[in-house]
Image 1: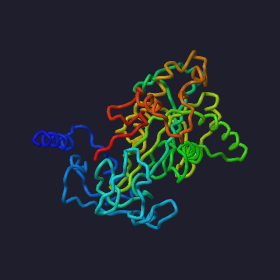
Image 2 (image 1 turned 180 degrees about the horizontal axis):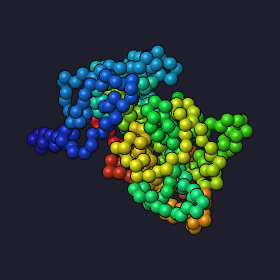
Image 3 (image 1 turned 90 degrees about the horizontal axis):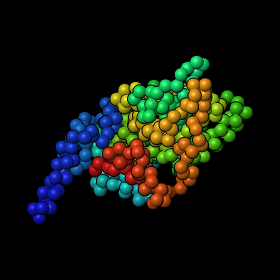
Image 4 (image 1 turned 135 degrees about the horizontal axis):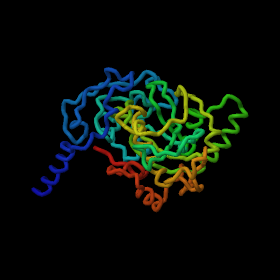
Length: 359
C-alpha cells in the first residue's frame, strides 16, 4: 500500500510541479475579441484536471451564433450527444458525470460552454501546408536562410485571417461524413485559391489534383486555440504538400471565405518563432514540423545560380505514401511516421499517431 501511495504521489506531484510549459496558453487567453471578459484566470499549475480545485468557477460562454443551433452545431444540451461515436486523437472522450459535458483533455481554460465552437468535445479541422522553394530573381544568388531547418528558402501558402490579422494555414473544419483528404483540398481552394473566371478555376483545379495527390502527415492532435473552452476544443490533421517551381508559378492566390487575402510567404526565423505571433494559434509549430520534414528530403534546392523557378531534384519529395488521407493508416505506416526526425519530445509533432493528453 505504501509503495502504491508513494507512486501515486509522485505522479500527482509531476502534474503539479512539472517545469515544462503548460499544455495550453492561448486556450486560457482572451486573444479572440469575443472572449473578452469570458475567462476566469487559471494559473499554470492549476491547468491539469488532476490538480484538485474545489473553488474553480469557469465563466459560462457560448456565442450567439452557436447558441442559435445552426446545422453545423450540436444541441445546446450536451447530454443529447453520444460521445462514444465521436473521435478524438487523445483517446476516449471523458464526460463529466455531473455536467454531462466532455472535458478538455489538456486541462482547464477558465471558460465553460462551447464559445465559438459548434461541437461539444473535439472540433476537427484539416490544415494543408503547401510549400515551394522560393524562386530566384534576376541575378539573385542561391542562399541559405538562418533559423530555418536545412537553411532551405521555403515559401508557404498563407492566408491573412480577417478576425486576427495573423498569417495562417488555409485550413478549416471537417464537415460531417467528410474525409480529411476532401477537407484539405476543399479548404485550400476556398481559402487561398479561388479564381476570377471559370476557365482559370478549371486550370487551377487540374493543378491542385496533382499537388494534393500525395503528401506527408506532420501532426494530428490538440490545437492550442484561443476559441477553446473546458468543454469544446480544436483538434487537427496537418499535412504538407510540395509544389514544384513551374507549377507554383501557375498557382495564383486570392483570399476567400474568412481570409482577407492569400499569398506565398517567406518561411524565415521570425515566422517560425512561436512567440512572435506571426502565425495563428499553433500554426507556427505545424510549419516548423513541415519544413523540417521537407528539408530532410531536400538538402540542395538549387543546382545552379541560373535555375530560376527550378523544381527540387526528383519527384519523390513528400510522396513516400500516396494513400488517401481518409483511410486509416496501417500499423506499419503509423510506426514509420512516428519515427520522423521532426518528432518532438512530446511525441505529437510529425507522429500522426495519438497525441498525449494532460488529464
